[in-house]
Image (tube, rainbow, N blue to C red; front, top):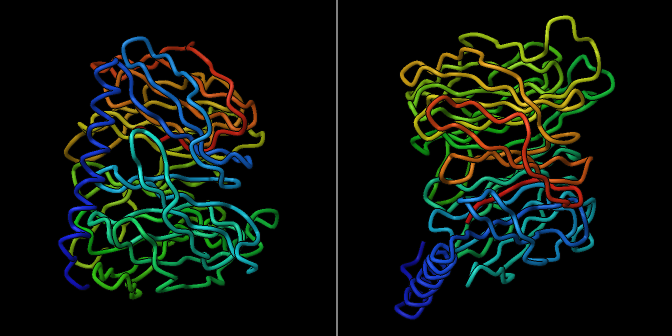
Length: 376
């Protein structure tokens, strides 16, 4: 990568300074900007968050980009990246991956690129901020992009998966659903819900190239949806959508491999109705882990051993709506926010930071098809 010019460096530094100043200004007013990706033509909405009261106030449309499934920040929070789950973009049968600069709490379009295939549902930025990965559910593929001053290059690397599983309704073909990076940034992971596996790659952060490094195979029909690493640096949790389980995994730093230590059942005993496990939230201390489940719609709280990552169940609780697509803790970790896709609302639950317990009832704000919540 070429060395940046003095003008480019100063422009980047100015953008970071403006972002920091904006965040401080909102904080001085007791508020924080939140961006919410939605499954609507409005795309990304802005809200102001009050951590003292748990109130969420609409602040308008931040960016009109159709059907945004996921949003994520650069390390300095001066750029935002989005995955748009559309079937065509720029006249090609792919989804859209877009980037925005963040200035004074507003989004300004920077770049947009074609993904590898249709139905782009997730993007993840590596720890250096120089590589973005996208995952295409509909097309069963993944792609990488170089990031320079927030701008996305055309696709650098792609892979189209061919695996499929035994669930005839959901696993007729591969469905790439989630991208992530190892704690040391040496490896990248793509969860394939259709193929019951996680594809593992060596990452070259300078070139955005990925090299195959193995595969983690889940139980047939499990449907690997997401992968989150525990702060201890050697444990990961794979949420399996189709059977509502969580694989607790040991991560091998030497080769990036994942080994299943145990599997956690999330469903109540005797439940046999429709079910889809969804997402994971881990506290900064690593002492508590939460999972969201759809169709029977609940959050499940666990106590975690900070050293081993082992999970002890606490309780299931209300998610505040139908089909919790994504959920997250606010920066104080005193509130849990839940994006309930089908009931068109975001629910806010108080949380006890010492015990990890979530309140059974909370506040609700109407938001059409909320998909992903991101704190600035």
